[in-house]
Amino acid sequence: MKNTEMLKKNYEFRFVLTKGKYYSGRYIYAFRVSNNSNKNRIGIAIGTKIGKAVKRNYLKRIIKESYRLNEEKASVGNSIVFSIKNKTNINEISFELVKKDIIEILNKIGQA
Image 1 (cartoon, rainbow, N blue to C red):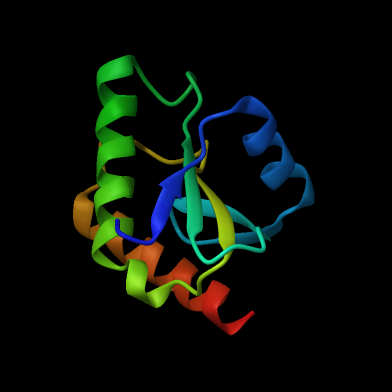
Image 2 (image 1 turned 90 degrees about the vertical axis):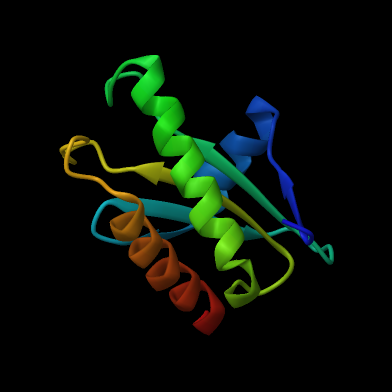
């Protein structure tokens, strides 16, 4: 992730979630807001209702890896927060399904 930094602070997440534009895939949704820099900033927010810590960390890892593999499709200068939809059955999610959703969302962001 050469052109990407991670969002870490609560106020950064809150800003993107309140002011950002909503994009949705089948299992994942994202909020995007412009950050007026030459780097993308991403955050991954997965609530405790999704599953226990092991499953949440697994989901974070596959979201981060699928973004890393497709970050050239993302337009530069955005802050993006990814999250899993609450109605999703976490046992049916795989890396390939998440990768397809990330590609679909990044294509929508690139067209905006």
